[in-house]
Length: 533
Image (cartoon, rainbow, N blue to C red; front, side, top):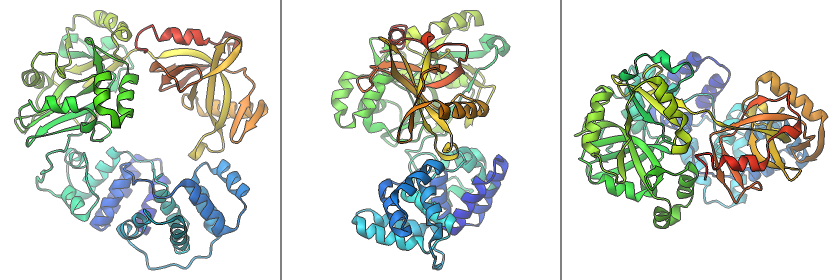
């Protein structure tokens, strides 16, 4: 584990993307295959199931160090990370180094064996391990135990590093990292193989992503060279029909076939060797339902049959990646579209083809985009007719032209510290809107301000705190912010009766008095403006 800890430190200590890729490439080239496999597992954001409760780590830390509980709380309020707090407090422990063990040995013969042990035996083992490790290794162990291992690299960077170490094309590596896999030496050997060894019939392709359209749409030239579709608000997924089996993979690489049995059943009628790219949508009476309806379906996994009737779904396809067992991603979009329509047909069943919008003019398309909310969509997708199906996000080929977010003016009422590097700053805010003369919480947000604005707000909050409830501060209700969010729905779980989706701060409205903020009635009216439920 020592080399993996050093790799973490090397990645965490630089902001250079190239330096991070180079560090990982060196590690993958030198590490034993089993070590590298587990490293890929964690670096790509995969996680073990929780082994030890956070509270237990705190209790064991106090037991090992003799500190009082209030010290742990104060340290955490400054550090903002449980594993890092414990690692720093344990730094005073005398250590008795042991022969370094590999990452697979730590995981397979120690950490994973904690599951099922009683708390006393867990504490005895973990406390003994702490005394054999240095601070960095102890920190990594704590991160693994609490299932909170994160480091500043994306899966794309990991793919680049493996490709550099093995001399492979990044597209090949990206495909081999998709889907479900077990981190073993044999698996990583297959990832590095220069031969075509793809015998996993359930494996999806890496997703091709669109870039947001920030400039003028007219800059794209003649609209006739583009395929225009609606931007659906559902779960991006690939539907795979191979070897008489069906698999439905979300973009987050979660296998969701069992959650949508009607889609799986419909896919059995597809030709074998077919892979479709599309969107799982809650759908009724010829139009999509709000994403909140789909969330209800997802959240009730034990009531699949009941929810299938309550929240019907369709799979709205917009691309075909494999036909008759052949990878066709290198064919132009206009040719893939023909094959997609041949595979799905023009029916209105569970499997549908996303309709293309005739590109008459950008002015006309802009008018259609303005009607998106009324249609239950997020805007338009603009794809070059000659585009290939690439890996990841490549600007210039696919664009997403989203409608502007909903926005309201709300008053800051609560604040609390952020996490990680923001742990010493008050950056997580709760906002309220007016209802019968009282501010009712409507949203929480932590993104959207510049570093200078965050520092200014932090100073203001500390000077204008009315009450404290643990880490939460109740502040004077005078600061107004414009909030943006993507969706709105009725919610019985919120005091306001409203839930908003992806809230963030758009502007600090220093020009507004708190009395000018919006009311709950105004927010509720947004439910009926299109896209709400």
